[in-house]
Length: 356
Image 1 (cartoon, rainbow, N blue to C red):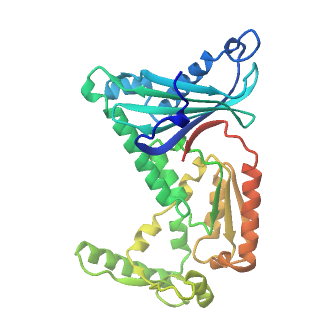
Image 2: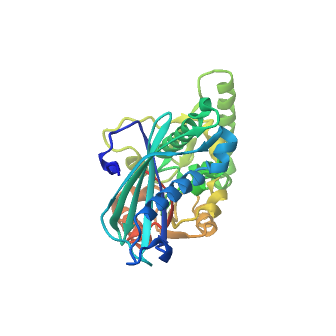
């Protein structure tokens, strides 16, 4: 057999996609000694490759129908056998599609038993098409789709995850994303609730300025700005009696930042409602909410946690910016760490796709 994948020369790399599946070794896969007969591992590799493509929307039937791909023949494969796998052992197969060429690609497979590497292997495959001119189509589509989605996720992670989960759902990609757990602090979950919570005397001037600014944008005129944060009575997106203290958290000493934003942003913020997608989040979700938050609606955050199948909420006697320093910061970090330990420590990934 050829050398294991760890010794293969580097080829064109793309963002890695790993399919994970866990199962028990069956008697029919074993030799008389009860140890997996080595060709069976190659069968496992082949099945894992097919499963990865199916989960990305490129099943064998879809590739044949949409791209004229009639198969992905093997041209090279290899494996190292490091630990024996026996009848009824539970194993996890991690199959990675990461190196791509116009006509070929390499699959890397790892079989783990009790967390230890048991088998390390690879497959090099080529695209086979009834029309050779179309052989590269599936490779291009697969590569571009994954890299484009990953780029958007990388940009979004950390502050706008629920919006991008909605985008993934809309494009049928959500089933591909393995979200183990999510922590959401100071959550902005319902722009409409925020808008309706404001006093008419404060909101109507803001909406008027936002509409005027939008019209100026259509006419290619300079934007009309409004303060992002300000004191009560000032024309600002977020007005708080603790403005001076909050501003120190928002803009640390030595940082240059203009406290203004194009007023038309208020129009899109009003219709930003990730709460409507909370019921689809199929992983543990923690929302850390300041009960005196005047920037983001605590009531909307509570409803979001209640709508999520595995939602949890932690309440804090604080405003929006108290999370960034001091006692509230320390408590929130402790709660978030405890939540992640509870749901992630020692957890095995049974089945799904991972983005790396």
